[in-house]
Image 1 (cartoon, rainbow, N blue to C red):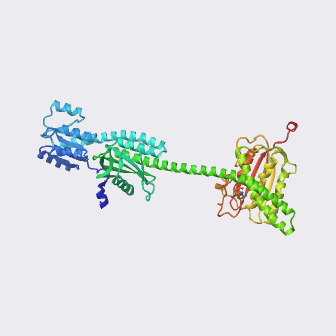
Image 2: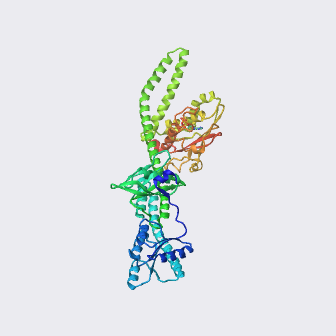
Length: 562
Ligand code: ADP
């Protein structure tokens, strides 16, 4: 044992050896001798004494014995008294009383105390061996029963452990149960997440102050991954007294130790027989429960942070859009005025200023629209529209940019005008975003194709990955527009997220395309408002197809009259 370990006074609590340990007590040294030799030959570990007081001390010091073989009538103390003490310390200990005077009175007393094994002196050595074997067999059955009872109780507790995600509650349950099952007076749960960080002590028990040696013992159990017992050092202070005995049990989860259960007592305390395995089992459950609780706590914090961030973003949108709108209109208005009165060269510069100001205005408009949609303030303004016209108008607006980049835009439109009722401005905004994205995320020289068609009712489910909620009109045909590009594409795992506000696949530092991450969020909200759906199909490196579907609501005669 190292010096530190020695000064801490701890020993490893390895499992008990296989040979049963027997304590022989008889005031006649000769009897002690005979019994010792006979039993040793049978493979038992024997401790013998002719002084019952010495035997009493051994029992009280919690020296571990499986069987007490004692004479009944001894000068300083009766064997029955000794049996009583032994039972008190270990309810499952096997006891054999040796007596030459097996009176009815003795027998009655013994039966009352649950001690039923007798050996009448003088006895044959074979009888001794038989009696010992039988008593030890009974002990093992009794131990199994106790273990089962304890495990049942521990199982109930472990169910409770799995049911909670509160760190302090997990620690509380663990301590309550282990203290109930042991002679320890108090305890602590020390959470040790990382080696470098000092352990966090869960204040599950109000009583007791953990002292340095207690912390060190726990740390040792943590590092060595094993249960340790410590003695003769003050591990904890309780009600003014020092507790100088301690048991440190590592708490494990997925092969890692993430904490230690430390139990303290002012005397050599023990776990009730058969309980250690149960405590180890419970410690494992507790380890997993503590880990879950800690992860849950972190998750909660992260969620809170995300919510705070989301609130900040909304506030930012509200302030930025409000504060930018007016000065921007002034910039645009005056620039336009000056441009109209300027010479050709200055005009060019002013065009550039206007383009940039218009770009800022578009972003601000997106922010405002999104806010209105989210607040339910946006108005739906239905009017008869012809889809071909809107598509063509949008393409004509984007074409100069596409031409600059040698991109080809092909368009496929039905011959019959697709006239239906919709909100013209909102539809233009949607088409504008989808086409502008196709141009921006497709390299120079790329291909963009726009297709418009009428699809029968119900056909959308096959394609529509991002269906709007239930208000989709399932009985109407769909006006479908698809914008296909052969650009950079979007990985499968990113696809559900690109419709979130501010989400961009490449982060702002590595991205070489401009943008705010608001466009598709706006498209989704608008599509929900228009009772339609939007979806994407894409393969990185091959391109993307964004589709929208709108219910084909035709202006009815009745509606026109209204
Ligand atoms: P922005 O284009 O302003 O970044 P959007 O909300 O319109 O914001 O798009 C979100 C993200 O989705 C883009 O940043 C891009 O990563 C991805 N994306 C959108 N359209 C396409 C497209 N046609 N091809 C590849 N990626 C696209």
